[in-house]
Amino acid sequence: MDSLIAAAARALAAGDSLAALKRVSLRDDPPALALRGIAMAQLGEHPRARELLRRAARGFGAHEEMSRARCVVAAAEVALAMRDLGGSPRSLAAAAATLEARADRANALHARLIAVRRLLLLGRLEEAAAALGRLDTRGSPPTLLAVTELAAAEVALRTLRTAAAQAALARAQEAAERARVPALQAEVAEARAALDRPAARRFQAGGEQPLRLHEIEALFASGALVLDACRRGLRAGDTRLPLARRPLLFALARALAEAWPGDLDRNTLIERVFRTRRPDETHRARLRVEISRLRALVKSLAHVQASPRGFALAPRDGREVVVLVPPIDGEQASLLALLADGAAWSTSALSLALDASQRTVQRALVELEQASRVRSIGRARAQRWLSSPLAGFTTILLLPASLPLE
Image 1: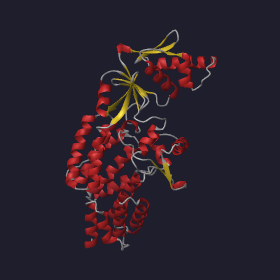
Image 2 (image 1 turned 45 degrees about the horizontal axis):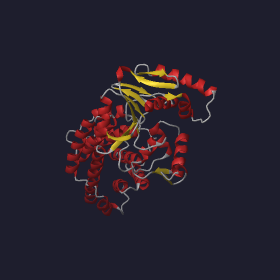
Image 3 (image 1 turned 30 degrees about the vertical axis):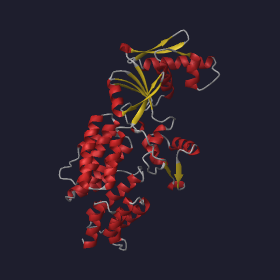
Image 4 (image 1 turned 90 degrees about the vertical axis):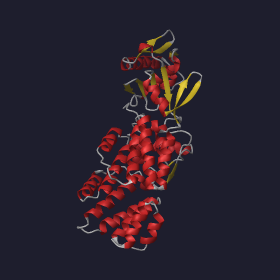
């Protein structure tokens, strides 16, 4: 490795992309191309970075397997930044194994952290937690230690373990300060700020009360029957009942929960659940069917009782009923939560993260664009979607699989 390549690598490790480019910007040999690609990625020029890394990988010879593996890892991180989540993770896993076999533990750990971050974006929290538990970070650079703790904090936040999240973020901050990388320090600060922002709203007859993450955790631990409109389910203590894939039953349960401790008349239920202003006998018959289904589904948590004018929700063991609603209104709340990270998402990546069809996501994006809540850049396969960061609250509970209700 010549002196310019070594100096550029040291500059990149310190987060100084411009200093690295000054040393290798006019060179086209594979090591210089790889460093230029990483520098361009740090500057946000992801398509250019991806092309440079591909050229670098092609330029390394058969005997330079470790260099090619490093290019694969860098390209995977660029794909993650571009929210290109459709590729197979096998090449990244193979690159990590190659680097581990050649004693490049730092880059092997980096590759595995990229895989963990991809799982987090896709909402696979259990897989991400298991992968984090297998990582050996002893003797790792402080930059990688900070990234590891940030990933651990995100898993804890999205499973509502705020004490574990606070401990992980404290370790991340300590590592980031030792790394002296401003971008990493800012990321840790932003993650810590999420703990103090409202994450949901508690619906009450007299209005709404904003709740922070630790208050939501305490609410779930209180034993109350919680209608969770963030993750679309019912919860009482450790018992969870998912309703995300049963929209009619969820709408029915939410209407009854909002009316608790009173009842709700049949016509109002029909209007809210079936979205019609002219109920007839067919609607009333359908309501009886859906009430029977809901009654059977929630019998371990509550009774659905008939009243002279409609129906009422009666929790078991005299529990209180609490309705938890998202910090932002609308059917596309989870979509906006993903776009709120400031990155440019493709439709395919959004459909993967939300576990929805691309056509469904496209329709929602068109509606949000017409309402000036999102904007698109590029066309056809290069089209990406952006949204302004949502200030004043956190959307942790709206992200895919944020609570184990599925």
